[in-house]
Length: 458
Image 1: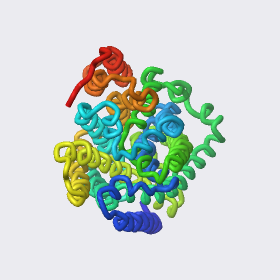
Image 2: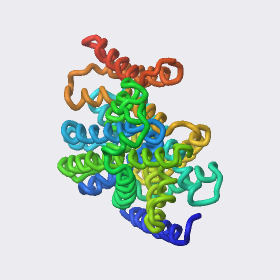
Image 3: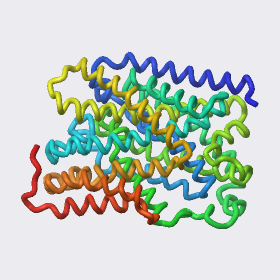
Image 4: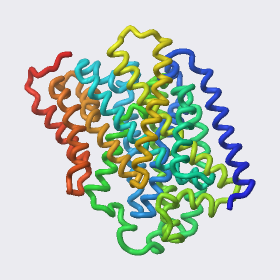
C-alpha cells in the first residue's frame, strides 16, 4: 500500500521534470533548433541527451528483469553501450561532427551518394521504432505499481507522455530533461544497487548466495547469444540516430567527445546497479514476475520519499527514451525522406512536420507494444540494434576510417541485404545464433564483392 509520501514525492519529481520540458519549448525557434539545438549543446547537455535517450526501459526494467531470470550476464547490454560510446569518442565523433549533418543518413549520402538514402532511412527508422515500443512495454509495470490501471491504459498513458516531452522542445527537451533525469536516475539506481549489494555482503557475496548454475555465468544462454547481444549493442548504438543526434548538436568536436566519454562511464554503472537489484529480488522473492523486479524493489525496500522519486524517475526514463527515439524517427522521416522528395520545403513547414511526425510514430509504437506485451524486453532491443547495425555500421566505419575506398554499389546492396538477412534469420531460423552474426557478414560480403567500377546512381 503506497503512502501519501510516495505520491507526494512522485508528483514533485514529475512536476520538476515537466517544468524543464516546458522551458525547453521556448528554446526552439526554427527546425534547426528542434533537430540539433542550433549546434549549441555543452558537454553536459550532450551527456544528458545521450543518457536520457539510451537509459530507458532496457537499461532499468530490462536489465533487472534479465538479471532476475538469467543472472549476472544481464550486464552485457550496458557494457556494450559503454564500449560503443568510447569508440565514438575516439574514432567517429570528429568526422561526423565536422560535416555538420543532422542525420546519420545524410553523413552516409555524402560519402556514397543519394541512392542509399531511402533504404538507410527505412531500416534505421524501423529499428528505432521497435525500441520505442520496448520502452512502452517496460513502463507498464511501473505505472501499474503507481495507479490502479490496466496494462492497456498504462501503455496509452506512456505513449501520450512520451509525445508531450519531445514534441515541443525537440533535442533541447531531450537534452535538458535528460540532464535532470541523469541526476535523478543516478540517485535512484545507485541507492538500489548499494542496498542490494549490501544484502549480499558485497560483490563476492553474490556468487555465494545465489544457487550455482547459469545465474553466476556471464553467458547463461551461450557465448554466441550473450556476447552477440553485447556486440549488437556496440554496433547498434553507434548506428542509431537517437544516440548520434546529440553529438551533431554539440558546440564543437571537443564537447561532443566529452559528452560521449561521460556517457561511457555512467551507462555501465547503471547496468551494474540494475543487475544487483535483479539478483537481490531473485534471492528474496523467487516467485514474482521478472519484469516487476525493479518496480517491486522500489516500492518494497526504499524509503517512501526515495521510492516515490525513484518511481517517477523510472517513468521519466522510459518516457524520455521512447520520446527521444520517436524524435529521431521524426527527424529521419522529415530530413531523409520528406526533404528528399520535396527539397525546397520552407523552414516553418519543416518544424511543423518534425513536430507532427512525433505523435504518429508514438501511436504506431503503442500499437506494437500492445501486441508484444509478454515478450522479453532485452530480446526486442537486441533485434532492434541488430537491424540498425546491419544497415549502417559497416558503411559508417568505411566513411570514417576508409573515406573514398568503399564502392557505392557494394554499400547500396549491403544496406538492403544486411538488415533483411537479420530480420529473416530472427523470424525463421531454429538456431540460437544472434541475428547480427548473420546480417553483418551478409552486408560485408556485399561490400567486398562489389566490382572495382561498381556504382549505383540515383
